[in-house]
Length: 276
Length: 303
Image (spheres, rainbow over the protein chains, first blue to last red):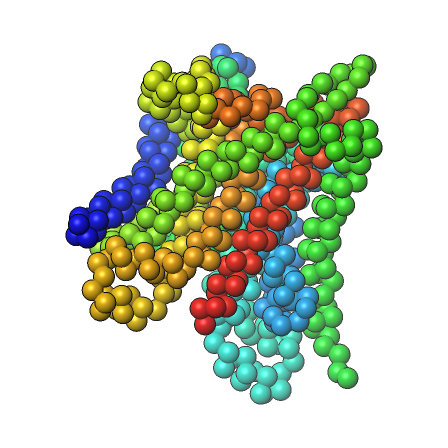
């Protein structure tokens, strides 16, 4: 009987493993199976063209791709300095009250519903400015990105063996100089955090819903104008009843998935573990 | 006393992060005030959605709160056995060659853009669930309240719950796996020395990491309840409070995603949606803080 239970247990473990991983392969397969024909049919034009009218062929998702690029770069510019410095702070002063509070806050913000960030940015930026804008979209993404980069920076600094820190202080260096040295040692971890943050926000949809606005028939018009993004485009197209829009959505999904895997897989394979 | 100039220079920047969080809270509270003044707590306790540009407006988001909790509970109930089973398999049983690929696969799943889950859910998962789960169950067991709603479209609490389960399982299993891996070897050896089978030994060891398991589920629940786009594409977006798994519904986040775009032509709808957001804010905060405390307590205890 105990033997039997042991076997049954193994069956349960294998079954749950299959159930956990199977959806990933099914998703990858479906995105390829549905997206690849669209990409083949649309050709280069699918990557550079603009969104067609309903029922009027495939067109392209060029503005959305450029939009995702612009939003990600802007978000990184806004979020990165604050995030890295916050990470340094909570690594350098782990026992002070503010240091501990910062760490807790970062972990909370990592799990914070991203739609609430979007709604918040709409309230403080879109309404006063009177229009959806690239700036608002990027700010929302920057807020989403910040905790990831900060937590990685903190961890990277903490992973530097403490004798280097002690040695530097023993030389009588100022803390600013010490941190500079430690940062150059922790560079790899910090860069990883930045890349994970970028991979994360490049795929985000919810924070953009009420901030970026979406713009798929014209290319980038300036940071105070509405802008498109690939995930946002997919979300909007899926909800439309038109056949050609669904096809474009699958094609765009394949593009998004390839972008994500191109950033994420190299980082993941060069590391032991990641925190998402 | 010597002043730490470096700390002084970093402090304002750290304050920015706190400032953003605080400002968010202030915005949600202040924007909710008009609807609280008008309706009181009825915004949370009734299920009405009367939008009107000229006449009387009334909003109650109970259906969305119910849907959020319902779908997240379904998700966690499915994710619970799967992620424990997966974690144990990866740590104890998986051959070396399989171990690393399995972990990479779940990490990819945890990071995959949620909209990809959304499009897959809407076009692939919903028809599958409708055809192979909902219709057979409805046909034979529709006398049970859980299965009593005719699955006409397939967009339902169940679809959302299953999709969320798929999304949060890798995340929950990562936390459990990490904790399970940390259990000292001597415990396992001790268990075998007592003559326990692997199953019995694993049961004992899982008991040891109970706080980590609990925190994994709290954090997974927090993630599920905040998820927006994937859910809103499969949940059906209908004001509905129905015990049946197959009924369409709303969640707080999908309600906001669907209604906020045109909310500003009504007087009170923006405020009502901010109040719904405030509810999500508070629920998410409480769940995640509880999860983080559990996790911290466990990681302190293990040393």
